[in-house]
Length: 274
Image 1 (cartoon, rainbow, N blue to C red):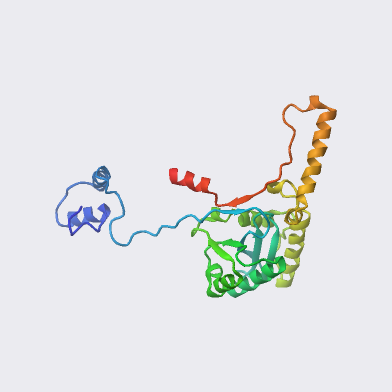
Image 2 (cartoon, one colour):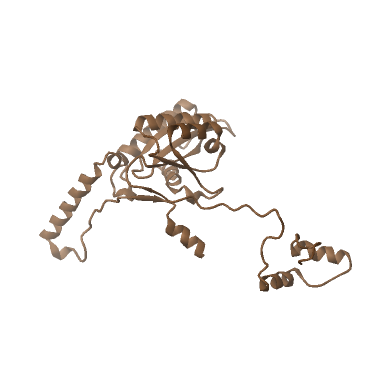
């Protein structure tokens, strides 16, 4: 296995080659077992398989510190054609801070949306980390140049790993499984824009998000959730004081989540141990 002829080949290649020469030494499984015993069970050859490191941990303790974004398809009446919904989500508040519908995927469209969202939210240089998948619009030259000019730090998921970008994936699931999602394809891009606009308004201003204490993303983005949650605590504490026998254990605290973590270190350590 370590000879110059065979050192770059796998057992599955070596055994048939030897058989063609009328030689049988051992089966593939036996060869693998011998390699494992000698701690040589690793990729053989110069073309090692690509490995991708998990993205760095990003901790958001306030709005506009970490955004994530992605593109999802919206169906049209023409088979094989889709509209593309670009969406930017604030990780801390879960507010949709930017969105657009286009008829094609493009890093130019993405760059325009990011620049507009940063201007709208008043994002300063070196304030924001922006996480995304590995698609062409995410890593296009125009997009990367725009992020650099804005002072936004890019962060990318591993290829094919949707769990690295969970918040935007959860948003798209909410969008496509909400009761108001159209049962028929969108007849025009104007119809798609109108529907998404209504959804974003509901999601930001009406929807009570379970992960942020059942306040709306807009309330948390503006810091109004602090007073809302404090009022709820007072209501619960007063109710418990009136009827303590009804409370078997601790009273619900309505504690505010002070930080949100994207790709936490604990999860990476667990994956390494596994």
